[in-house]
Image 1 (cartoon, rainbow, N blue to C red):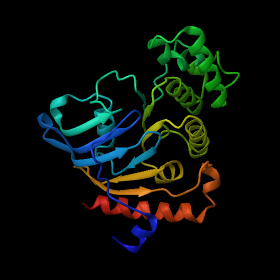
Image 2: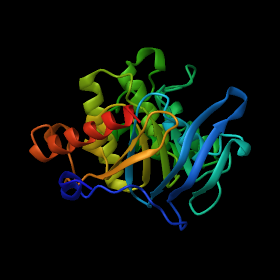
Image 3: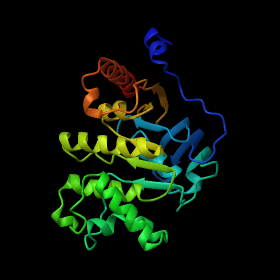
Length: 275
């Protein structure tokens, strides 16, 4: 371990099989799509504790989204070896402990912003008055008050993502899986939504596993940044982000400690490209 690693407290992920409500445990997992001859993930272990905000970065195709899909129960069981526990239990499709936010907003064009924000809770059978009150509160939190009755075609891409964020938080799931939710947005809108997400998370402290290609996004929001190698993906660094909370993504841009962490994660990502 280098002096820089010691100063930053960097460790490789070596979870023990524990797990409990709100946790995600991946222990010695390999994922191989045999029909395509692709070993996507190799001997990977990661422990995300309840209430943690953990980001995963790595080269395109290294298995980041594949790990999320495994935790969500969306992969056939025969493609993976090792142990995965979500909330202390093996992953299953339709797990109510998980809310999954994709890179695309996936709004229903025939539903208003309010209708879309409450859709997930509606599918789960939450009473109408409860889910509507929750959706209205979240639309307010994501700065969409006054747009409740607007349809997706009348909203900008950033506004659509705000609706998707409200829909995700509208579920009572303790674990949120987020796959590059702000990847398609312009820089200014991305900064705004990162601060919105941090505000929601700091209020509720749910577990978040966040996939991104944006190192600035990962460092500014997370408790830890996981760096993966090129395929087959392996975890090559687990970097604690020792910045104070609550945080403002925009304010951190002037913090030397943030820039030091950013530079260090970048060096680890470069190492991963060559492995």
